[in-house]
Length: 430
Image 1: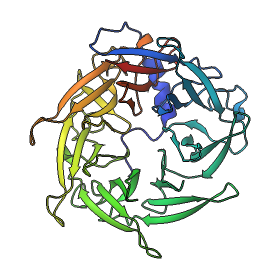
Image 2 (image 1 turned 30 degrees about the vertical axis):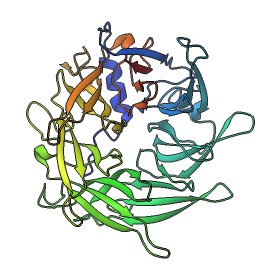
Image 3 (image 1 turned 90 degrees about the horizontal axis):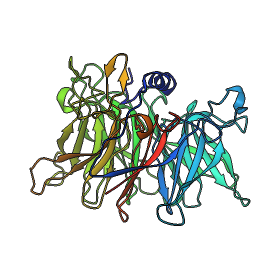
């Protein structure tokens, strides 16, 4: 059975969260959180389930619901793509523009739920949840955007784009065990889809998650299952892998870097890994199940480091295990690295907020930072940049943050909360 670090169906999960949302006032923290935009559940959309992308000072993202009421006969539930433009003068208001509403064209999907990525031509890419499809938005001369659908079946994560504007994606349900694909753009706007690697479902892993590509064209990723099948037999607990690009006329080479060991050591992976200049990989995996905290809630942040000597084993290190309660819980989205090696991310639950689900206090979510130790072998330090409180403060962040390191600003979204409980875009400064 496939497992992910978030539910396969965001629709039922989102409705449940609407019912349990509660209002509260915002506490004081050393960092300053500012709401840049409150969604209205109108033409601008509602409930952003992914983070934002920072490009040339503007923020781009998606709202998974809302939009035009005539949207494909589905009421207001198709979703939008938006741009937030910074104010001309410091301290002014950010300007929201809805650049695309799903349902305008017969082939449109609905429920956009991934971050966005740009290619070198200024085209935008993301995925929808109904169905799990990859879309392309192409800017037009008149300032609008037109939609194109390069692939009708993909994992609900943004693709990787290389310097030649080729796309790389995983499909966790391709074949029996999942595969990694390349999509090459053609002059007529279509894409040619090529299998780079099909997983066998045994020791090589199965059900791949998000991907990341380095400057040498190598693709790094994780699988949810497979690997060492003595872990949770006969499925395996997942792998961390690399795909090496071929020489001309050759094939891509798959190498396993690490088999997850399960239990308190973590199991499976879904979100794209973060990779630093030294080749260290950072990611999120589910932790050990217990009566007090499930593996999904008490997830783990790990580091996988290259071997000290060529041909040696990669080194797996647990950096932090979320404990629920006042600590964060249920992290979703990719980790973001700054130039000093610190990691940033969000947890959907946890913190000290008053949000309740099914009668249980789950917290309203957090934005966290993990700072590396000053000396090798030391412990990483967790700090919370913000603990959400529901109400106008926002609740349940589900996506990655965008880091503007030059101006010391983190940008992100909350799925709910805000002035109309339709979600927010926020900034955290210090």
